[in-house]
Image (cartoon, rainbow, N blue to C red):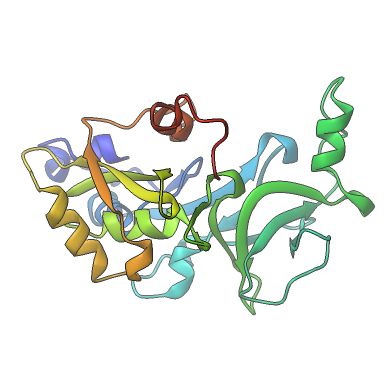
Length: 259
């Protein structure tokens, strides 16, 4: 969608044949979503799921895509026949708005990983609950808000920092096209927040500009300490950012990654 709306003729094209656009695989920045709504003028459906759940299990319908509405930041609600829960490490359910691991139960969940009993045991818990590896919370109305992949969480000075929150703040910058946030080694804090930023065509900014902008939107300890610029972020065929490709060079030679 980003490739299309950034084309010079995008706003002169007649998109009236479009009724809905379904998006998923990775979070869409709020600024990009607003731009797409303005250009395509159709209904948008945010979708969330994984291979282990046989596809989509959560959806946010067009009527919830309203600027300023909190739900616009969510992944949506569970589809019929799907159960959701937010669990702590001991499989206890957490109350609304408390972050934990997203778990799901339905008849479409996988039976297990082929010939990988240990991986299956880590993913499929008791009573058929499948742990997704994603961290998030649900609000009082059952809307799911996804924070990050658990393995991507950054721990800096004992504080948990969710990359998606920092990336959202970065993408609020009017000249930033997309961003990824990773943890890199830091002698004092264990890990430090690093932002990798892609600027919109023809736009430039300094690392200081980006850091100062982000500081106005999130807490100081979550603000990136350093910023790198790239022409494009590495992604897999489904569109997910390959964070490991971004992170590995900084952890080369280390015994382990802090996060």
